[in-house]
Length: 83
Image (cartoon, rainbow, N blue to C red; front, side):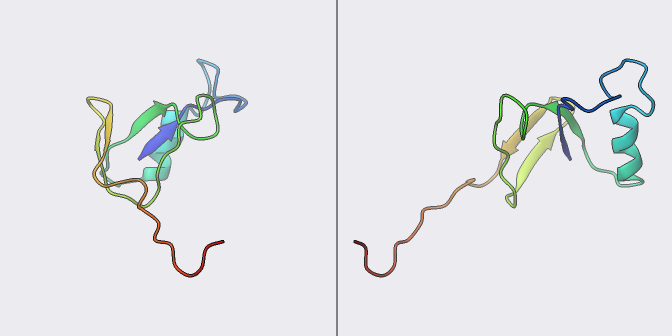
């Protein structure tokens, strides 16, 4: 799971926020045993780095790396008349 930086979410930017973003994420995950990488600069905040959806990735939460295992875009094949 990749979690973006929580910009402009009232209450989460305070050091004594309750619940914290980490607590919220862990509550949502429940007993799932999956890696979580947080505070990633992607999505709707600046810098607005795109995050491809629907492709395989390798996530190493300890080293804070996310590697795409397949292309994020594929060539488009034109069909029919152009012009």
